[in-house]
Amino acid sequence: MTTERARSFGAAADDYDRLRPAPAAEALRWLVPPESRVLDLAAGTGLVTRALAAEGVHDVVAVEPDDAMRAVLTARSPGVRALSGTAEEIPLPDGSVDVVLAASAWHWFDAERAATEIARVLRPGGVLGLMWSYSDPDTDWVADLRRIGRAEAQGSASLVRSGLSLEMPAGAPFAEGESRVFQRSAWVAAQDVAAMLGTYSSVLTLPAAERRDVHRRARAFLTERVGTDPVLVPFVTGAFRTVRS
Image 1 (cartoon, one colour):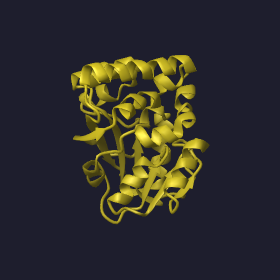
Image 2: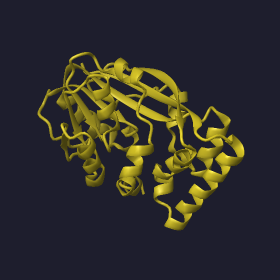
Image 3: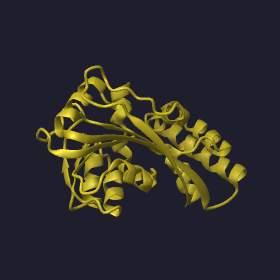
Image 4: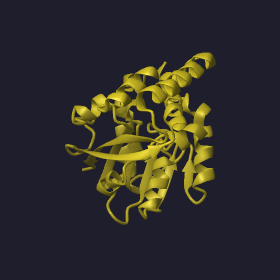
């Protein structure tokens, strides 16, 4: 089931790219030192790659296993080197990058194998940065909306609330990590707020009729509960940083 969920995003690659929140710019500035060569690992459609470019970071290589997601990435970031690969088998030489970023992806990895591969491609002193970006369920209406799509089961918010106390696998050459939480808000069309639920694996893996019902109920909820269009949506980016020894 985990593999099915992890591979479900390609079917909605365009919507994923259009609707999912990019990480907070402040999180990228915290994770990426100046003049870094960055690996965007499990890059999806390139949300992080484009956010890095907006911050002036252009030396980026993206690695993504899903062909449909990677196709959107290459179409929308035409100058970026995009490779097929996984966190467990990264198609890059030893010590070839300064920073590895993975956004909303660590929970899909085989942590032990991924930590070994990430350490291999990172130069000593390089940064591993993990991020999770999502609409903030500490706002009541957001929590209720996420329950419609069973998105509360994704676990990102619980992980961030816990302080992102992630531990690298035993023996992995990484220092003790540190974490920060970054908050922002953005105006989003109500239709897109409802459609965002359809980009979560909990909804993508449902039969088509059930996916349509989730969207219908989400749209009705926003009309009744929030009542504005566009909607001011609070977003959170939780970030974890550790250094390769």
